Length: 410
Image (cartoon, helix red, strand yellow):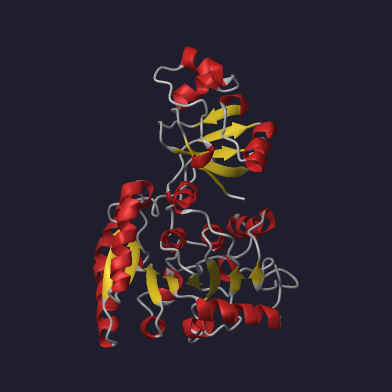
């Protein structure tokens, strides 16, 4: 991780952006809407022109766009914005048609077609729908169409509801930052560009004495990097105006924490991520030209398609706490997870559900498809596999999770 750009960094960015053949661009509410309310039309049309230029250069572009709730609030005359979940859903229903109309007209003027895709969590958590989604998007890209993607807020509450889930529950579809990362992962994109109203990931609170430095390159999303996101989200922590995803008074719901998580998902899928300010003139053009804007999160060797789905595509409602011996066996020997290595079961799940695997320090390091339900698993944890026949009807495996159904997050 570096705090400043170097010539080597710049060369890497230029090579990365010039070689990216499939790009996902995410536009947040904070850059779509003006400070006074209403869409920032000048910035909006500048984005469209830049996206069109990227497409006409021979690259494939997928666009994940926020803004529906804000446009709906403006249309319905809600000066203070929508405050309740049903009202937010109503605003999204009104605003989404306006948002898509703007995109369709703008791209058509530049000789391009746009297609609307409104997604829910089930489009990712259900593997059949997950595979069908890839087929649809692939066909659209082959036809030269620009998919414009948003969460289907009027029927899906994953993004709009306040987070009140227990700690072991992992919501992988909670915001458009993560949605853009899931799309990048699913479509094997080379670059994810997240444009927001801050310059990138900072080393601390810019309003404290001494300010903060922009982190130009993140080689790996470590606990230290994740802690910067937690500090930004904490009450009394780093200000949203300087370090979060949305300025005070705007309608944005994200923050730097969700952008770090999105970058982590993309990195494990072999996709680089750049988080930069969309309020800078010609931001997309400058990033694609290799200019050192924002924070670059470097990609890792990508997971296989099935393991990407296990790791990131579906929300997780339960966790298995394993002992240190089981953790070493899983990570170092790529073993299956046996009941003897499990200390605790948190939450409820059925056979075939994806569950989280955490160590004794409560760190999640893997996910996997469970061969037994939560009720069955509680009966056999800590026991040798030979005891399964005595305790479980319809025994199907010795292991709680087999090695081919495991995905490691580290």
